[in-house]
Length: 182
Image (tube, rainbow, N blue to C red; front, side, top):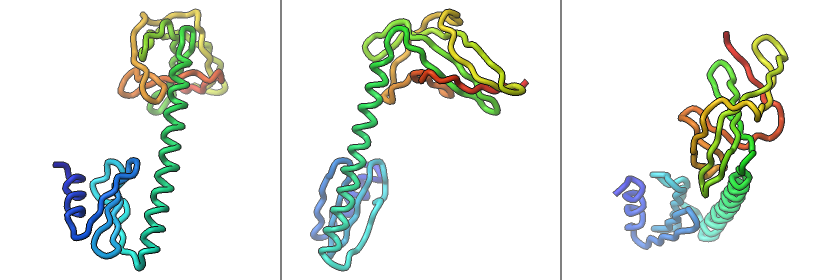
C-alpha cells in the first residue's frame, strides 16, 4: 500500500467518515466537521480543516469542487489543443527545437511521413542572420537535408521527444533566436 493509500485509509477509518471521489479529488469528511481533501498524487491532504459550522464545511467543499471543475476544463482544453497540434504534424510540416546551456541551439526538422501516433522526420538546414556578436535569428531551409530519416512518437503534448535534453514542436513561422559561445 502506498503512503497516499495508507493516509486515506487512516482517515476513512475514523468514526463517521465518508469518502467521496470527485473527478481527481478524494474528499473525506469525518468526526465532527472535519474535512480532508487529497489532490492527485499527494500523499498528504492538500486541505485538512476542522470547520466551525456545517454551513462552512458545505461551502468549503463546494468551493473545492468548483475549483476542480475549472481545473478539469483546463485539462480537457489543453488535451484538445495538444491533439490539434499533433494532427497538424503531416508531411511537409516543419518542427523546431531549441536547447542548450549558456547558448541557444536551434534545430529544424521536416515531417516526411505520418504513421498513426508517430512521425518520420529528418533534420534540415537553416538560414542564419546575425543581430550581434555570436547571436541572431534563423529560419528553416527545407531543401537542405542534414540527417537520415528517423521515426519518433508524438507525445501527449503534441510534440516529439528527441533526447532527454531536447524536444521539438510545430514551428510557428517566426524567426528563432540563437546564440553561440565560441
